Length: 314
Image 1 (cartoon, one colour):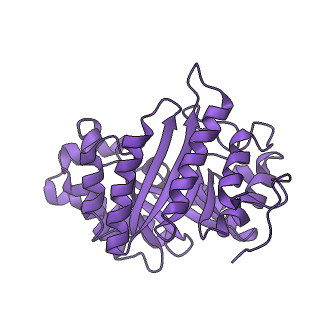
Image 2 (cartoon, helix red, strand yellow):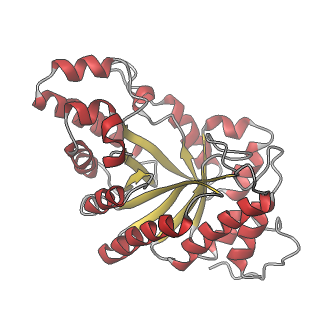
């Protein structure tokens, strides 16, 4: 346990990985191998990240771009750099309704149901056999719940809702010590119900928290608490897997920072169940314009300061 006194005036004396570790939570970032080649990103990752998540390199269009042709070099390069610097790796993601290769549509359309399951099973096996030994955890299934069913690509259209459970069950065969997560956003109670239904085959739930200063956090956090309680009761864990906060037109950076503080306060309150907080990116803003904890120059911003205050209690 990291019990050093944390001075309030010098928030950069320690890395975020130490601040979070003092609360038994690992702090993560999302990136790829080239983050280690950036003069701005590399020092941030090395100093602050206890775990680094792939952003795109483990998605189906990268790992099996042509049918039967598997490619692992992109994510392997990131994992190798993580190992070099003692940073754990998190894989994102094996099955998603987006970013799958062009050949999938025709292959699924032309196959019978057994053949469709076989396509999914083969991919899960190959990817898990390759990455489970080097990843601490993996998002096996991403965003397969009712809120996206109408837009859920080939898996819902050609297999159905059971595709998510099937992929989780297949991944379990090859997981070893690698922890398996169902990862998603949770806009409705039905979304949360679906995630909870997978706790018998998953090690936990990855909760995306891409929210704005205008978000009804009472309702959203209550939904998260219900999943937290379900995971706690089942002996499972939760990752706050994709965190960024958007700023409304009438909001300030202090408003953004207060949302970040609320998120971290929730994680602390559920210590032991929440095992990870990952900002979705390294610096600046995430894919949706949501703010991270460092500005584009790599300097700690207002969000960083309030987060450290929550973690240290000072």
